[in-house]
Image (cartoon, rainbow, N blue to C red; front, side):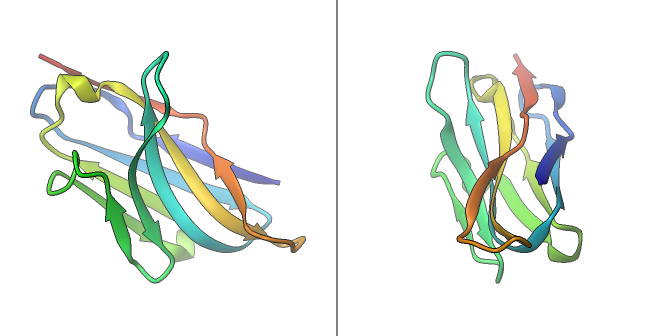
Length: 121
């Protein structure tokens, strides 16, 4: 069994900053990719950023230069540093991990429970 637990969400004024964390735990053999997505009620979940095991990063155009994704492989943890948050980015942020667990088999997609981020004007 694998769990992803997010933390760090909250409320800030527009232009403020937050840092999200997501720790993966359980029967993990190797993590291929970790990332963040976000979703507003009634809309599709959208890609924010991902980071691969060697450290390659990928960002949505809307967050480039404002958000920074990083990871601690030893702790199976991914972070998302967000600056200059805007009210339209008030959403639930979800952690994602593509990993192989110790029982073997192909990589599988796991999701966290989500953490609310609110930027108020």
